[in-house]
Image (cartoon, rainbow, N blue to C red; front, side, top):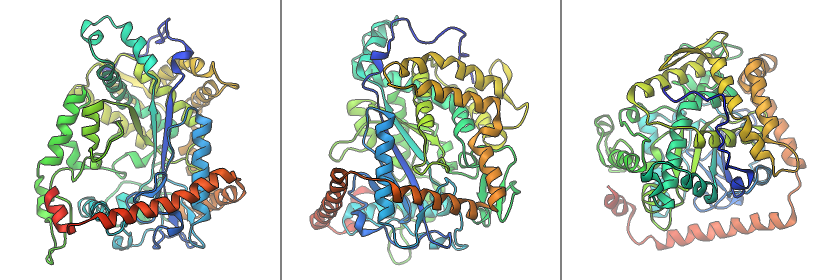
Length: 525
């Protein structure tokens, strides 16, 4: 990691004040499997009483019919975004089939030996609905269904234009001064992205909560994990196996060479991946023996969303725009932090202190110098991430930097200490401190690794007797919280209306499909 060390002096320029952070927006996407009363993955369809998963803006499905996804709108405060996320969980809980609960962990448990029993998400008979299901079928034959049942939390954040305007006004590089605001924002957001990639091990160490894997997830796979208790596997000092070789991986994508040095290069890399055939995927075939499609195409990426990354530049698409077209047309509007495990101890998958810390590290990454990432540095980044994933809490763990080896604890502490002025900035306009206490909590986790979520999960697994029992215990505790949560009459009416609107929108799409799906697909191919 050749990224400059966090300096001893504040990285906050003297002219930056708290007012420049007013207008920061954040949104959360949380995934959660539905589990049956026996602990196994639900085989039942997405509840109709929740509306259409295709068109509902806040409650939908991800890979599987049993993998729910809750999506908040952008909110002006952490308090509001978490309140919205809690409402979504409670609405979903009210409408689950009898006996079902929301699985509280990133890594799944109690999967059938035959992964064909993991159901694809279904989106109706419209061409776009069938297209979305076919995309998931393609993921299945490329990577297997088990990998697609992993859950995570995606944290979206955007900073206000007034901050970027001030940053640009104080640039000393004439080329940066001459950029339009849109292009300057994109340039700075890509600097944030590069630094987040460099600093992802910090997120994994502090928020990682998947140090164990249920044995049913690794059926038929070679692995070096050790038995823990009752069919659960682990590594003693692991933090987030979800982020390692047993998590969501894509060997084909590692050969793409997509970089984040600028928006143009990133978009070129994505476009090449969605247009270029990949021999191993070509061998799988486009259609089965009956002429039914198996995957959208045989390209390295079927569609842009197949590209898995630690962080994504985002722009809200308009009309029929693809994500990359939206970025090309209007630049980066926000970033999506994707390296976050579900917090099993939280009924909504994330706590306020974790949210505050993610915003701190995002701002830190924006303000810190961000040189381009060389191939050598990328190799070191990946090696260090793997070390933190598998042995992050090990005493005397060393990380590799361009300047030589450094203690992982020293490296973590150095960066978190440098974030303290940012915590003060964020807290200035709040009625009570949030960011400074959150940072102090993270510093305590560095000083005492036993207080990290990953260490707690291992200890609680032992107490409760394995993944299924511990996960079931937490799911029951969370269900009690959902049951007692009060949703305002106005909010309940809003969600009830969304059910009807989403169903009407899906029906309209189905009625508007004038060509057969094969004709629709052939045009795309």
